[in-house]
Image (cartoon, rainbow over all chains, first blue to last red; front, top):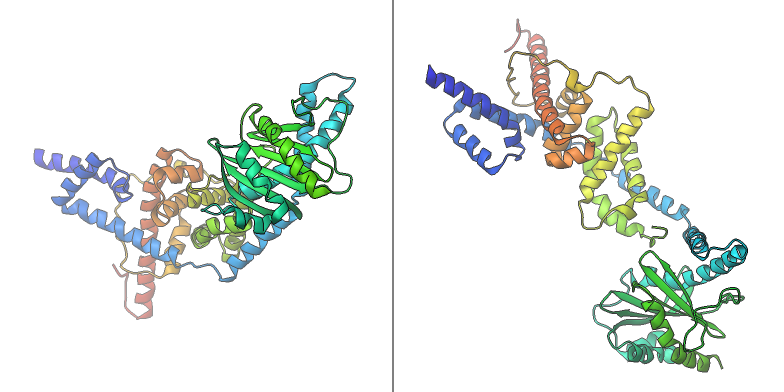
Length: 282
Length: 187
């Protein structure tokens, strides 16, 4: 009697575990307990067997339901249509407006705020031009596993722009050049140098000015620096973009350096970069 | 984040499309028609595309997609204000322990018909755990319910399904007996 009782209680307990046992969700010790019981209990073994067979029937029936072959193409088309409908330009507008709001609050002052807002919006929009190349090209991984040689970079950038590479290397000895090429983002061509430092990737970007494109002047004194070249600087989340201009070109440095470090890099590059670009302009 | 880099559709398609068949067969097992299932799958992928920038590459894309699928499915159900039947947990259990025999063979349609007979809440858990082989934790995440609820719904769902399978088999047996001219029910 006691043996029977014990057996029944044992089976009752094990039966409660069987579902989790079947789904492989039991702790190792409990798993062993169940196995040991099953070894000497035909009743519970048969019940487990029934559960297994029922699951097998269900799996077979559900897995036999295949989608119509056209569904994958239909989904592909729908996703691409949705992707095309979302314009890239609006991302930048949102960014520029948001930058205005953030910087406007920081600068403060009721009187000059509208002028400052205009200034900041124009500055932000222009800095976005450099930022987009870093994001869509460098951060997208557009560089080879082995860095190209200077000769290879000259082939892509042309003999004039490739002179920027040794300048950048000289000013940034703790960085490694990963790529020097001409690329295009949103239809705009760039001369693009990608570097890797301890912190991550950095881009030095040069692009020809479009008619009327220029960093705004006046109102706010641009960042004062030893080189005397007006510098423009902004930060968005963890990315910093600094920029300056020559007669025909815009130059940007983009990275995830914190504080003023990105701006300092741009300042250190500015004089010699301007020299090279000045020669190309004449 | 105010700004995000443009994600290419190719990247999304490579990660997400391989799970289309699994998503479809689950949808088809839970919805009335194949057409509804196709529509739900498409809706799922569009929503997945919209939130793909929030998906962490390298994490479980399949589980993420199933979560979106059920989110859309439940949203649909709420939207149509279907009379919410008593929660599955409220369904009284028979006090007689019942270990239904499992038929040797059944047609797929009959098995799916049996599945359709058990309450939706149980059906979802059974399909996710037994067919799609998600863990209790993954099922809980996909359906937004506690793990304890997953366990109890799975247990009862499996038992109810077996009861339905046995009944289908029995009625098929009776049918066959009648057709073959034999008298009385077949065991």
